[in-house]
Image (cartoon, rainbow, N blue to C red; front, side, top):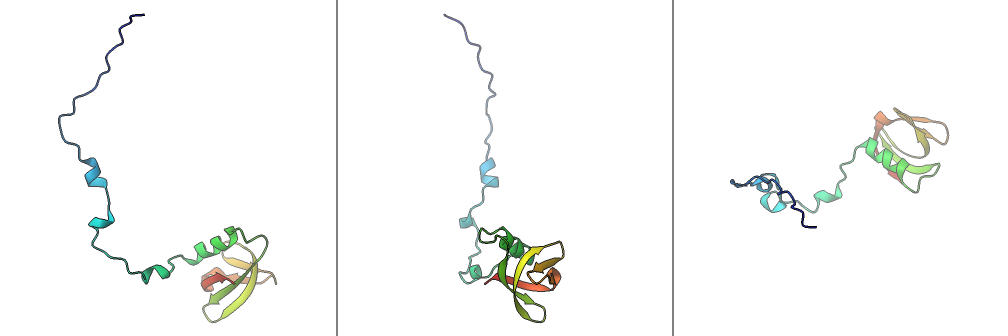
Length: 105
C-alpha cells in the first residue's frame, strides 16, 4: 500500500498579478452622486412597458390600461398585440408608434 504518488506540476509565481484591481468597480471610487429624485422617473421604453403588461401575473386574457397617445389619452381594454399594433377588446388597432406612455389602471 506504499505507492508513490506523482508530484503535481505547478509554475512558480514570480510576478505580482493585480487583475482584480484593474477590473474591480466600486461606487466609492465614482464621484457621481445619485439624486433621490432621479429614481422616481422610469427609463423603460414603450415596448418594455407593453411586454411587462402582457407578462404580468395579473394578465390572463385582457388588461385595462390607460394609453397616452400623441393627441389624446384613452382608456382601453387590450387583449393582444402584434409587431406594430395593440389589439383592443372592441377589435380596434392602436399603432404602437403613436403611443407615448401606457400604464395599467
